[in-house]
Image (cartoon, rainbow, N blue to C red; front, top):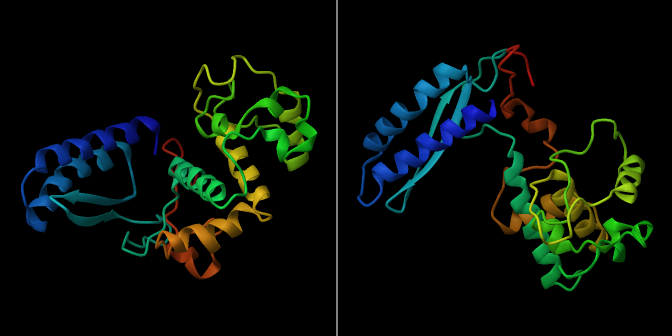
Amino acid sequence: MKFRAKSILLAVLFSTCAISGGYAADEATVKAIVDKAIQPVMDKYGIPGVAIGITVGGDTYTFNYGVASKTTWKPIDQSSLFELGSISKTFVVTMASLAQVNGHLSLSDKTSKFLPSMQGKPFGDVTLMHLATHTAGGFPLQVPDEIKNDDQLMTYFENWKPAYKAGTYRSYANPSIGMLGVITAKSMNSDFATLAEGTLFPALGLKNTYINVPKTQMSNYAQGYSKKTSQPA
């Protein structure tokens, strides 16, 4: 789904919440409103499948539309798995907060405390709070495409030059929050996937949320598609 489609989808959902807020509504009424908001978006942007969760007056409703795959034509249902995308950032900062509570790190620590190779480098002076709040000094949205492994990634951070003084400018960036996850896991002597699936997700009551989707669940994986090619993205 393209960013514009996502924005429109969020807009219609927020509109639905606003329309429905303040009074109790039965499920049929809520579904009719959601149907009216979602179906035109799916039609216009060729979205194969969507799952909607909405809370009205303290009651939670879920509605499923379309298919998870245009190959198998399996419909979206309560077992469908979707990629969380940037919502995963909330898990990273939650894990970092847990690590701080348990004494593994402090958000005021500098990255060089956990990454000795960053000693004397600009990235080494960045605090974990700066990583968490996207105020490290200016990273691109994504890690450059030419970086293919961990060694190349560390070299990238060793050579990084900030465009701004840390804490003065916010630039939404995956390299920033990603390194917070790396350092958090390192401080807890583990890897992030193990900590998330073994500690964080169970504590939050998330029984069907994964970093690495198990083979037994792959049939429930909702396939992403490119709007241009209608092929898996």
